[in-house]
Image 1 (cartoon, helix red, strand yellow):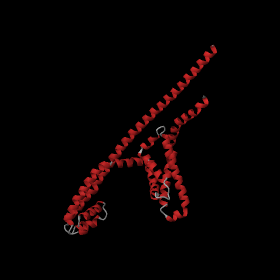
Image 2: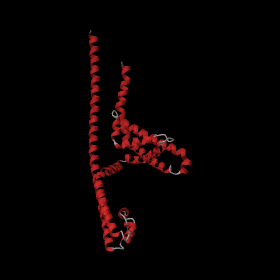
Image 3: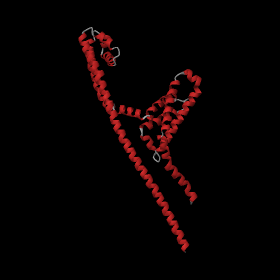
Image 4: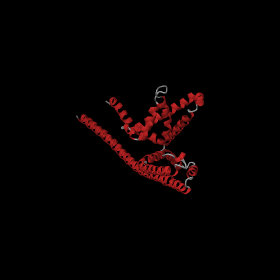
Amino acid sequence: MIVVMRPFRIIEVVRDTLPKVAKRIVDAPAFQRLVILTILLVGVLAGVETDEAMVAAYGPVLQSLSAAALAIFIIEACVKIAAHLPRPWDYFRDGWNVFDFTVIVLCLLPMDSQFAVVLRLGRTLRLLRLVSALPKLQLLVGALIKSFSSMGYVSLLLGLMFYIYAIMGVHLFGASAPSNFGSLSRAFLTLFQTITLDDWKELFVSAKGSSPAIAAAYFVSFILLGTMIMLNLFIGIIMNSMSEMHAEIDVHEQTKRSLSDQQDVLTHVVALDRQLTSLQLQVKDLRAKLTRDIH
């Protein structure tokens, strides 16, 4: 009976121990630094592989380094999946994990096939894994994504302002500066160049031939509204989104700690229940042995 139960006991111990060991490995600073260094190496390799002379001279070395980096990424994914046992599918609940796994799948495609372009794209995307490896970058990207909904209204307001100023520019300066304001499409391009502050003085000089005062008021008001106010609105939205992300991360960390504490308590309860069951079996065996001795 003991020989039969031993394999099940080993499986049970592995099932209980493997997630804890894997989680300790994932949370270890040395492991995280290794992943970050590997991502930086991948970035260097992606740049070197654009030089045909370097590829011709050191092709096998570059391929070996790329394969080693991919192996580290695969090991990292396996360890993270093991840390989520007995619910390995929880690994895919995190969007960054899904991105990492997708990059690995793209990199595993055969190089000499129709997927060669996709493979090269996947190798380039490996550098974006730096975002998933650094929590601060995750916070910044998350804040940018979170601010998209609010940026839509600001972009609508900016587009409306572009449209109004473009129509005004065609009517005011279309005759004196036809190359910049001769049509609505040219006016849009001129305003885009103006809002970037790229040689806007030349645009002003070409438009002030009809009326310098009107041209000055037109360009100065557009630059103030477009560059100063709109830019501040975008910055304000991003900062607000970062504050919201900080609050969400704090709530997530508190929930994670609470769940971890509950899991530890549940683990101790299960261990105590197993010990109690073992003691009950031992007591039952002792009673049976005493009964046999008495009789």
